[in-house]
Length: 226
Image (cartoon, rainbow, N blue to C red):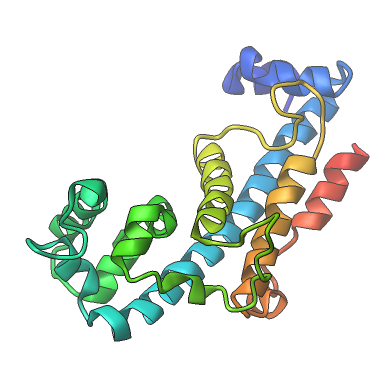
């Protein structure tokens, strides 16, 4: 496809950043655009695998302590999330229940999004669930006076993944320096490495889990070589 046709479909405004990053070379700009889509697809797949692993691990830890229907019970009147400080958590659970045609706990777990599970490590939700959820990460480093690997630390790490997940879902590029028309894969690589680190803290063999799915480093290298 000619660049004029390509930019007509994608819009010149959207393509301008790719064109600048490619030194005005229209063919490279189109390649970079496609490689960014490929990188987003690869990274979104890996984040999706992490999201499923995280929510299942949280549920596995919570059921013995809080009951087989801990989410539904927690959002009911008098439940652990029936407090003003957990209002949005309760609301999210009840909305998800309302979206299910037939209720089951496992369907409810799958219905709730990444942002919901991230907030299980926020202060009030973490306390409401009995402060048990750090056991999801049994191999996390030991805290020091300088750095506390506590629930708030995990919450902020998950926020980084939630942010890039939302960025990709809204078709925003991840192959540039933030805010600049400069080709750079550092942002994507950092978040990819964070996912691998969290998998390791969960004692999950990430290489085996992602076998055949993970080509992020290869795509990053191809972008860098453009």
